[in-house]
Amino acid sequence: MWKLARKSKGPIPEFIEKYFGAEEKAEFLWLWAPVLAHGQFQVEEYAMETFRLFGKSEDEAAEATAARMGRQAIQDGPNPVHVTAVIHESVLHRRVGTPAVMVEQLMRLLEASERPSVIIQVIRDDAYFPGLESWFEIAMGDWIINTMVTVAVEDYVDDRRDIVHKAIALFQQIRARALPAEESRATLREALQKWESQQ
Image (cartoon, rainbow, N blue to C red):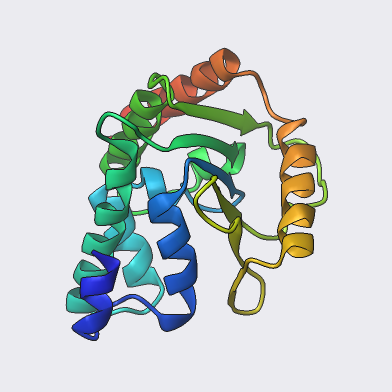
């Protein structure tokens, strides 16, 4: 889908094509989200609202959202990608769109966390730690070069072994702070109840 979008001068920036190509063929994804829900688990209206907030027009936001939804297809089928996603607790309470959008988004995370190919863990919002400054994602597998995408001043994709290994090590340090999967689900449910009460 991202190839088609790029060919039609769609919403996929050229710099990130390398990561999307790796993601499409990956066997494992490691995702760290300190600010927003992971794109791999965003529902349509949550994604639309984030793109609007980034200054995209309605048409541009719709195109970018369609591309993001298309990327999620790797989680389906007989051989889905194995995803480990770590989320900072503040993401669950940071409103994107309406409370109804947040309800839908948290329900999506809960549903995903029940899949055998997905691990979702939450880090409590109680202290600073290295890695809190920026999100990143790592795509890994036997048939690809391990590749990461991150953002600091600008989005950045890298497949150099030493850089990706640093990201892998940082992900492991971040994940060590996370709640176990079942406690993380309980935290998701608590946040869901909060947003349901605000509808």
